[in-house]
Image 1: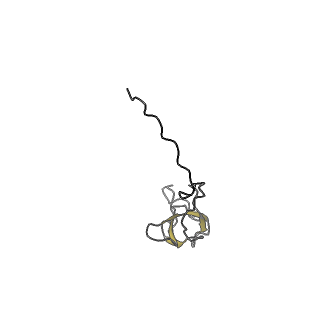
Image 2: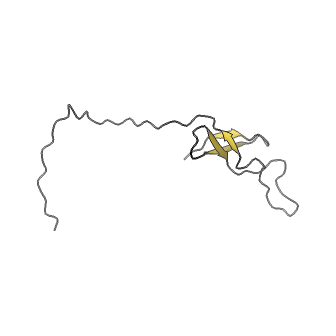
Length: 88
């Protein structure tokens, strides 16, 4: 699944946004590193302080539409019954 990206409000890096349950218009930024503070004094990576914050999604959530070639039940012809086959 490809997640939309938005610019982080603090470090301005393009960051993936995961949709939040219960909200079609907001999501959470994925955890990412701040470009200006990549490591702490002990050498460990430091996440941006805006990681996991709530932001507006770039495109409002929408219901998926499937294009199925299903026949209309009113005009569909009845298929012939299949012969019973022995299971064993």
